[in-house]
Image (cartoon, rainbow, N blue to C red; front, side):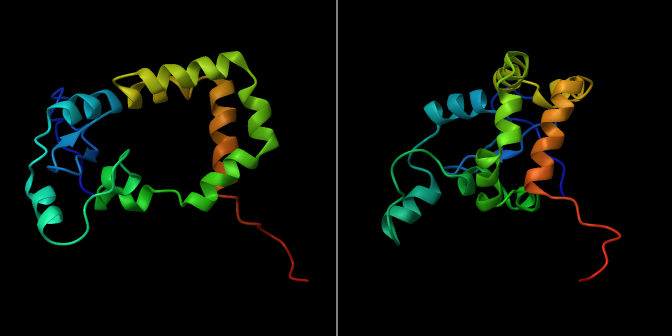
Length: 148
């Protein structure tokens, strides 16, 4: 997997994991995406090609496919597994904790999410949340189980 380059909006080195669906410019976060979207030239080669050849781009918010690059595809969790998160009683119970909700909001609003995530992984409550999510989307393989 190729290392991310610098963000075209804020200049953060090695942080630009997402690409603009209009012009393929790299950016690192939701705030940088919003800034870029306001300034992005709507007459990009991709949009010109879409307008002249083939169906027009769908209106509305960008899809995950527009944001994730090919190199990010291996890290993508399938939608059916993500839906399991919403069905988990254990996860719902954890999310009732106001401290955990505040941690998640802080991450969502942060510029440097990766260093914040590393710091929060020292918090037992956040580790419990992360482990719960992982158990749901990637259940552990049953070891030492005799076939029936």
